[in-house]
Length: 345
Image (cartoon, rainbow, N blue to C red; front, top):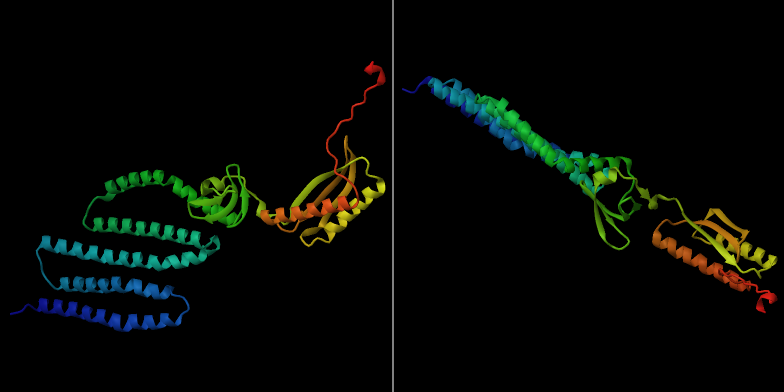
């Protein structure tokens, strides 16, 4: 004759198998229909992530209740109880582990201001770290269910953690360096920067390093920890770019010609579309040893190095034309030597 407890155990387990089917057909289907209507795919991924772990959890609960109706030897009952508790803990940590993957999308949105590439790196780093912690805590929890003394394990884990921390010190420093860089935003991709170690254009910014293309077209990879602790001169963040020079004319230039040249250079710069109009200083400033000097001080609207050089060249050509049209000449360093007649004898 079949034992009633066995029948009760089968009924209990079958009930949870039925609940598992209901969970799939009703709860999961209902949640899936809801998530389809939302604009984000986070909830879709979340439902998909918890589906299998909860299926497994329902079966474990059914097995646990069914076991209570059955009688076993003390040793077997202990093993069965430990197995069920371990499986229950495993299913809980499985749920947590799976939900971390769609969580990366949320982290990515919060870190999107750091740029697409860096945002993905940060999100992946955080998610992988959390997954490692979930696995470690889950493993320790299961060991406890079997009565293992985990103090020694935790001590060894601490030593391993210290070794890992020392090995990953530079990686962590670069990670925090990248966070500092993007919280302060001293530069962005395409900016021309200068540091004590490198000068060039920012080509890419990663979670560990930043790539700088020098003017010699070499690609320099700089650790973010180094950049975060360096003085950074960002030429691209200038609102305008300065041109400063001194023009030396020969001493045979008369006053009227000098006044005309100064006036025409000012007018040329004021009518130039690429010259910033707020600051234009053109003055006859000094009598040098071999030249009459005109001081020129003005700014270009562009800060791009190539465009700046093009504007500077254009204004230089215009200045040369003005000086040539006024029959004046550029002076060059010279020295006159006078010999007295008495010294010739």
